Length: 97
Image (tube, rainbow, N blue to C red; front, side, top):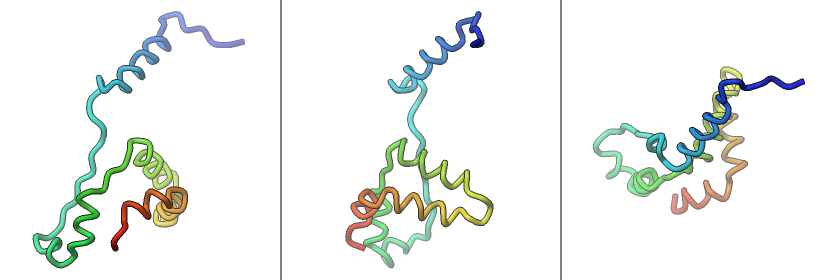
């Protein structure tokens, strides 16, 4: 026996999901980094990679999920798991280092 949806809330959520997919719910998340002024001079190749690094919403979401679900102290291992699962992307993103 299933639960009924007398107010049609599930239909509204479906519409909201579609609106989000069309960009009506705003822009995607952005990551920002803070560093010292001479970082780009000291590490030009790494600065170039960091400046051009772009992850899709799915990539960022899967990375966040793995880290958030990891037991305390295991976040680094979770990030490494994501790297292993996304090796082609990581290799391409960090070419030249």
